[in-house]
Image (cartoon, rainbow, N blue to C red; front, side, top):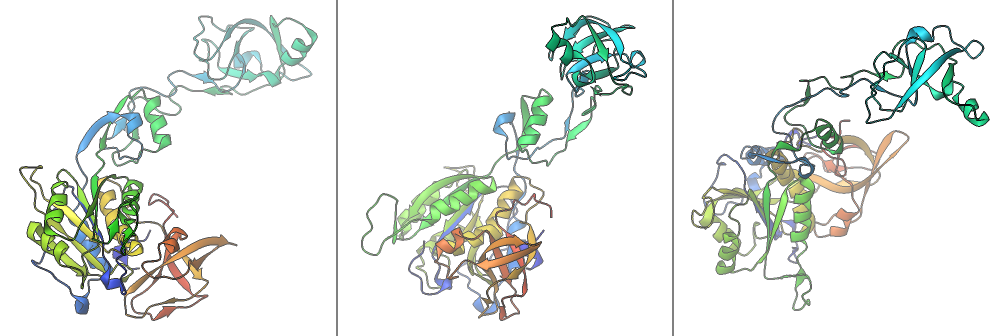
Length: 468
């Protein structure tokens, strides 16, 4: 597993450091280290690991809630689950056949069958009130409780039932044609789960299989860690809403949708606030809508050269750092706490993460920093995507000593992963991100990774729970 700590909308920007969009969040947190005012430290950029460390120090799992189990898919169990019953609750048949006593079929074969009297039938969901005694059998269906007195189930195929049916002979008796061991085709009570057994421990991700387990225990509700509410805000006068006719250099706001989708994919609940224009009043008005959020993610307005409106408002309303991170794309990054508003909200500070405005930069920064923060609030155990080693099929260049995260499409051939760059790597080329399923890394201290060289690859289409 690769962790960023372990190394490894667009505003017609000409350079990446002029990226232009960001988003914010709220959750349980500790106060981050901060500097007041606008801080740009291109000459002293933060490493990816240091930015990650400072951000992650401010997040912890959210509070517990109790919900119907069907509403808990993708959430994290907050408490251990012990079984209130045995599974299966009764010994039951693993086959359609006949419930018999083992001693009555000892030595049976097709040439020397054992004839037993059929005294009844038991189907799944029924409990027979009859007892299998010497020389008798009860016809039984898969899943039906094994009748009293029986200890073995003989499948239909090991009897003469088929030939009896084809010839019209009654099934008042049956020839057993196989000598089966004691307990054959019988599922013991508690074979899967014993009463009181720890079935799922706190911290378990509820997937469809876990949902089935909870239902099999008869549990209607379960205690889970709450999903974080993540507000998403784009900034900039150049942005147009969907459905609006483009004019005068406007571009559509793609970051609200890309970031909101990323929030949902990470397990959070996105709340799209729309677009804040480049004026103090609109920024303040939009920030009033953040109350109750666990995180605010903004895009644009956080890099050197941007209009100061966004930075002025954020600095006025909180303790925000404006960083330069030693990575490409996504060099500019803002992080800190918006002070709570006791009138409109809980009064608790809301963590803010300001992403670059270029769409690809925003998505990569979200992947590296916001997604792990959301997963921490969800109580997830694994925070980092799986990584693999692979072979580059085309070079990755590093011109300025930053860690490069190149968009690649990974395929596996003959046991080897191959990383194919998805085209131009400009931070405004969003289609190159849509074609990618991974990020290939060129370290800070290398000028390039050449075709044929081995690289570390972060697998974007593998969940963090994948264990390789």
